[in-house]
Length: 471
Image (cartoon, rainbow, N blue to C red):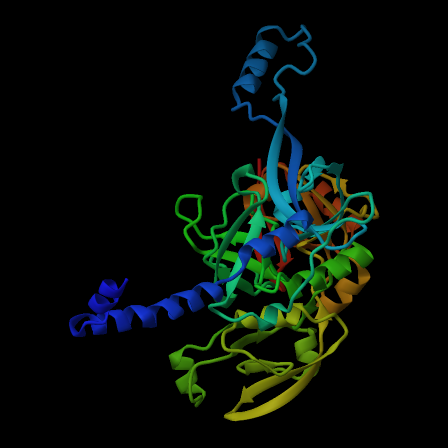
């Protein structure tokens, strides 16, 4: 020992030893400050669920059986074909996803796209108990669904403030990637306030992370280091279908707003201004004497809209909404959508080089995009266009300033081929107004057998015209 001490403290080795001694506490300190993911997982895993769905779909026949059927009818017109000949067989299609329990009486949050169209939904808990789940409500625009299982004293998560999360903070996801139940993955927050590329609506301002999110993680929770849910894993950007380190989570504050409405009414109401907007680029900023490009440029104020009633004008630049700065146009629909219809909002606007404040009573977004398990009254009416429609609520007609019928479902027919979607509001058919189902039925009856027919619809706060090909 004495010999070793003399060697270590000999003059040539002193700098090396000093460096080693300095590094030891730092390494120990660094290890002690690393996130305790193990405790976080142990605490919250009991509230995470695996979701399996089953849907009956009709297989594609490729047209061959129908061709054979037609040929047989021509060869033997007097013979009856067997029942069901030429029909494509039905087959079950399964899906998997994740979710988490939010209350001890069995309410569960997951993604809309995980459960939409499902005939049965099976929920498996961490302790291997299995339950059949009921859909309380499902909202397409936010991609949030609320389920319910029967029972009591279930383990539940706690929620955190998604606004408080900062870029660079550690986060952890628990879910069932590729059906591998209750898997954990960690990462950091890469960005906030993201609009997903290619998404036509922006009623969710996503949290972007580099957590390894894959198929099956959808609907699972995203935790902060306090063990609170600050997001719901929803989407990924990928060139291969697997994780590329770019994933998006629905902020918990958005999800809680949606869940509260689904739990109360089964549907979701969103605010509406009634303006067509675009980003302020460098040229617009120069033309309107702005110090720098920012805000949402008002291209058009919709007639009869809440914005028009409040005094918003074309060429206004909205730079703030309820004390929140608007840096890009994609932020405005998100902030407006979080406001309950009928509420008062304050717009900060740059007009003619001056900054002014304009109060507006927020309207209600028409019911397109809101899915619910509640039955539609009156019953949807089918027709030869390949769609079913139902009455548009009086409130939606008054707030949006339109009259029409809501498209509920589409089959493979002229309407779908023309680009119509479920949730569109059909305003005119072949230049005839269709303010209600009766007027729509009359317009359908008067359609020619073969022609190109214009149809006017209202979608995402604006009107557009598409063309149906009848043959």
